[in-house]
Length: 252
Length: 370
Image (tube, rainbow over all chains, first blue to last red; front, side):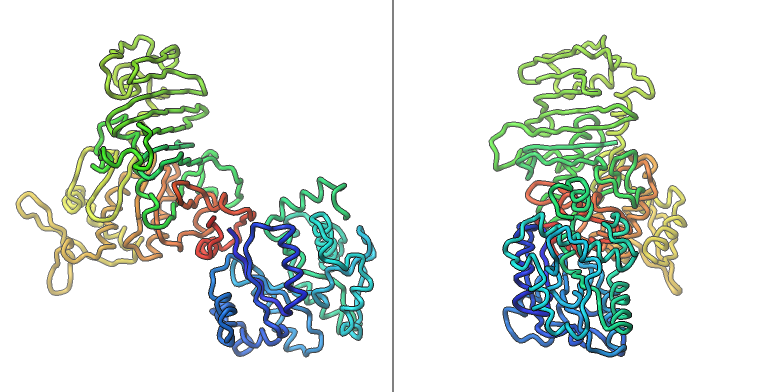
């Protein structure tokens, strides 16, 4: 059985997000959440040696080095079939730091190996930044750099799906599909559900690249949540064909 | 090829244990681990005492049922034959083979290693015969399909497998189903590399390995084998003492007796070499704890070697998680034996496993545990 470790930036919203998703989609999977309570840049500094990722580090052990809480140390000591890292984009940094995040995304791209890093643009709350689905306006939804500080309010206000506890399976899958289509749009110019092979090729580091370029050029980024794609992670064939073959059930 | 096997109430398998070798997952990689839609190379993992050795004994029961070939004495142990937690009076064995397009099912029950209580044979789902050894009743309507219609069977006194009687007392053409089946069974080989040279099937001959190497002029080939599989550079020679050949390791100032100084791994590899020379003739190979003494690279090399023998089905048991790797085999070729049930990695998770998955790590991290 899968035994999953989530390493998250925040303590409350991330935990609610994961609990809700797994309660609806993956009741039989076991997981632990380790809240790191600091930004991705701090994490990066733990994993890099001389501007390069130390390939021999096990992220669980690296985090344990500074963890003093007994229970949290226990969480980091267990075996896990998957490790997922969920962090927000931190736009207020220099090029050197952006480069490191990109390297992180290139290295942490397999949950069953070192771990898989999801970066949310601009932050976790972007998952719900949708009008009544199917929402075709989502394709071009962006956020200005100056508005990121108040993004939690913006996403709440502009969301028709603000209450996470009201989600059911079709709604969750439909939300994930919206973000998946947008991923495909940003990378390949096509606002559509990718074929399975293209899905497997979607690169989180390329997405990051595009977003950072846009940020420096026009001080804005696309709103997109990658952590919600976790729902599709385990059984992409099954879920994508479900959406394709049962159109009446989903809002895409 | 063996396509399915199940056993019930035998040794630690109280409930039915099923092995299904059919390739149902359609993985696009490592096709070399399959042949004609059948998983042909597999590795079984499992905790100590979960019954990995018993799985081998169960599979090879058919060898002592249908042939007189040598078999490890444990296969004849009456006391442990039936499951000790059940009061069922027989153990049941079900074999399904595929020869060309023909499906052959051979089922039997036994109350003791040498005492059959029931036997039946199906070809393409047609019952050829069935016989109850206790009531002496049976159906023999379709014997003509296997060229045995004139069979003169003494039903009251027969005390061994009817299939064996048929094979020995009818004239079977070279490619007949009965011949293919008996050929398959008499070319199954079980061995283990722990301790003495214990084996089941293939032959009745028990040889001294050193003597065998020398007599067959295999010293150079054995040196080469050690070098290629284990990166061992040994120079070997022999002397004859009485009727025995003794293998020697050549060194700069003197020679040493191979038997006295070879490591456990090398001795185990020597045994492997002996059976390896038969690989072209083996239909189904089972090696118990095949790499108990091996360096992990050597274990991998042995699997690579086995993979070269396309026509040989092979099942190996191991504790070495290094072998769980999609470079070597596939998630449907790796099995876990637990609580008397055998399940492939592919069937032990609801995740869609891909070539890119690190299945060794997943195995260690409990992905395939219940």
